[in-house]
Image (cartoon, rainbow over all chains, first blue to last red; front, side):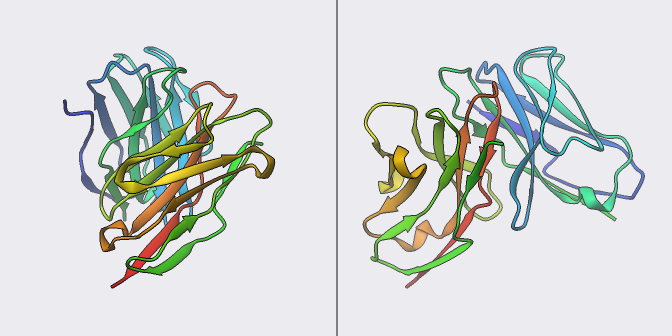
Length: 113
Length: 113
């Protein structure tokens, strides 16, 4: 099993450019999450999804959009990248309420110049 | 609002010494509690979890954690630290909001040889 796979692993964007980060899980998990990790800030939740076709805002949703068209995929979009979005992005998934532990991808390091 | 606090940003211990990393949560009912470890450049790996029952839980790599409701704490312990334990450790909880996880800011562990 691959678990949670994030694409790409590294990316450099210019201010104002757009991009999409892809997260795929092969564990048949219902819940998926996007976090960003910044030094000294821990992990902050951007958006999450509790099932195919549903999304919800987390702590820091501004400047990001998400879609969950298929159960196994969760896409994070940046429409107009800003230097403040320079961060490491992690996708995670969990099965359901009765098994809430999250499994994480390896991360995407994004730099906006 | 629900939150998780890790009071120690950085801890240094000698190899072979015992370790305790502190975690406090704010939530009325008993939350789901987790400890994750992150090695440099890697994603987060689940060390252990607590849902209910026995308040002392065992995890991987020789770690254990104790849930204390009276202190709203879930501290991580290891009797004898190995150099390979050097990493960042995150405490997390999942409370009343469906599918949402809350992370502490992390504790960086340095191990002296």
